[in-house]
Image (cartoon, rainbow, N blue to C red):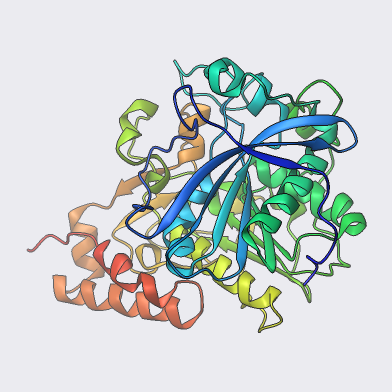
Length: 425
């Protein structure tokens, strides 16, 4: 491992007062206190080379066993405020494995405020300092030119604090654009992180950024060129893409690449960029015309992290996955209407509904959340001889996904609980 390097002069000072930790989630996570975990928020202050003071939220086992792995999430600022989408997907896996998690406010907009790439109507566009000046007024972000240095140096300080011997970097959506840049342009020089999980990236890499301001990701996407992950990796990189990321707004397809010795790309059929698991009971606030995507990417992302931890410690490589089928710029679909190929979860392999990664004609936010369309009852009875037949097929698909390494055995009960109701004749 790479963590015997000197710790830089980054000071971690607990943040208190104000309204408490400003990092909410639409879906409640595990009860950390009951699991023997702590949650502490710090101001991370140092120089890289500009002076900075950002925040990091640290969740880690205290009375529970610790694995020695620290998972560092590049907090997402697409909504105009910090969010931790991968904590939402991965929390159960992190807690049960004893991996510490740190969410770092690496970008200017998260601290100082700025524009939103995607916003829900009525949501405030304020950085931490505007949301709670009593708690965060002392923070200072020098601009996204320094975001990568802030991310690495804060991660290094947190790793020293928790005694981690493995440090992995993760990020979803806008953060995945930034991590693509980090892998391609920053990691070859600092070689700090032991592995990367890049979740739902688009076709280009994020720009380097400027001093005193946040990056303009929309402008970068308009002027950028498709950017695959570099081929000369020295640590494992897992790229997890949903169906909804391949075409349309995210348009990952032009940057699609085959697996390499230290690269695995998984494309999840029937999954959207965001989904019901992420939004939870707040689905109605999106105002989407159809139910949002009810796919099972959460279980695939958890499996990807498990493989990355083992692979980065010198264990077996993660399994390869079949790409989603695309022909002439369009998805190839099965008789139900779901895409062919890709990582196939039970709700796709034993389908009783169409699980789409997009929502044509809907708002931008609804397009990112996809949609779920129920099949006519008559079609269900043509596909399945009886409710027992459907249940057997769903169970077999669950076991196949576990055997393939794309769902964890520990998630078997949760996956089976998502078996859909099947109407009797």
